[in-house]
Length: 561
Ligand SMILES: Cc1ncc(C[n+]2csc(CCOP(=O)(O)OP(=O)(O)O)c2C)c(N)n1
Image (cartoon, rainbow, N blue to C red; front, top):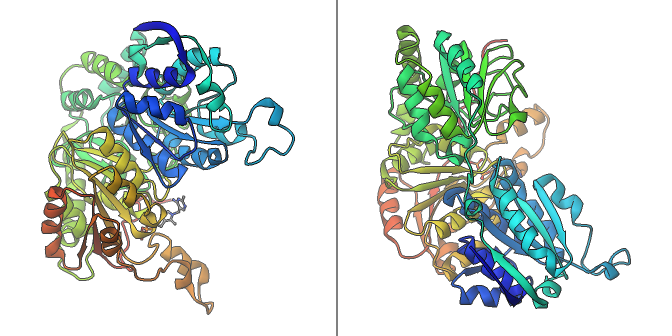
């Protein structure tokens, strides 16, 4: 699609974003105000947030659920905050396009008000960062931003626009071609095929393995390859573990599902991956979290890696067999290259007995009537109430562990998104996700520590009628670190609780004060009705569930030694 006419930079940016299918921009004033006027005319929602980090997280949540780039913006002094917010998108491989303003060259190197060098801020959190200093650069660089964000491993990109609020570019006029390159309006834009010999080599390794296991990562969701992964697993009866990010690739009660593996994990998944004689990573990095610091599986275990990025092959497990390509295409080819059959009946029995042992052990906690409420019970109630097409957005730390290990996803239409590590990410990210899929129920699961970060965005949710449900696991403090805090104190006198305890606060009342609904739940048997009420509400709703600060999430299992 192309049109070539004399227009302002503002109109050009607005028409390009519109043409690429962008429906929302997330930002803090004062950036691209002229463009925002044109965006309104084109029907694009302009979401003003209360901090740049929240804007970045919203764009990230939007991008992760919609398979389209999310756009966030900040003026010059806000750029550092915006960059901080891109860290999770970078780690979570999410295509966010960040637009910032930068003062013109004459202002540089002479104490420009409100400005530091933006380049070092964006370098580690983007795969592409460019200065746009002339109107004529806008067409090619804006298109390149979409191309870079969506292709290969999707990740954030950044354009630094002339003028601290971008006005210099948006006010100028020129013959600017509005060209929309359809493939880069979404990800993946293309699906590269793996080399036939690589597929054949991986197929031989899988056919020869006696105890294979698949580890499905977030790349499976990025490539929408869930059906293909399941087909591969079922053809050879291969058990499937997932990374936290890959949760949802296989349904909870599928006989091949062994659960989430790594540091935030269920014991049975770590046991299965440790006992495997071949681990097939699909769209998963092999970093410390998914491998529990390379102990699960131990280094030396034969590995197949299916990845879009050749630089990932063998990064942590030397000698890995690499199948480089789009996960959907590569897995389908691999499945086609394999005969139907079971690797080993006794292996399947072994993995299923490990799964049952784990599930039987935790079920009493998932059913517990104890007060304060056990997070395990909260997760069971959430599992049972989760709508078939829900998007569940989890914060980091215990919120990731509780949901990864204790929430059972039973429907293929359910999506699970998790913070790549930034505490506080989930609430703004869930708002961004809801903007992208307004017809789906979006539920955020966060601790109170995580929620405090972006509490102010309740007002944003109310203002734009972004009707999400936010479950706050309210234990009045930062639970994940408690064991370690007491460990470092040892027998020394002092006030360890100062390092993790908060004043009691009612988030339900705060939500109500901000025009949202707020429900406080103190009894386990109230959770279900609270969720029902929240899911039916026509306002953003907070459910604070009063849990206990003494409750510990499962520790990861590791093989002896
Ligand atoms: C930006 C950032 N700062 C600090 C941390 C370290 N951290 C991870 S979980 C956590 C505690 C979270 O507390 P809360 O959200 O209340 O959940 P709880 O552990 O109580 O369930 C902290 C401090 C982090 N992951 N990200």
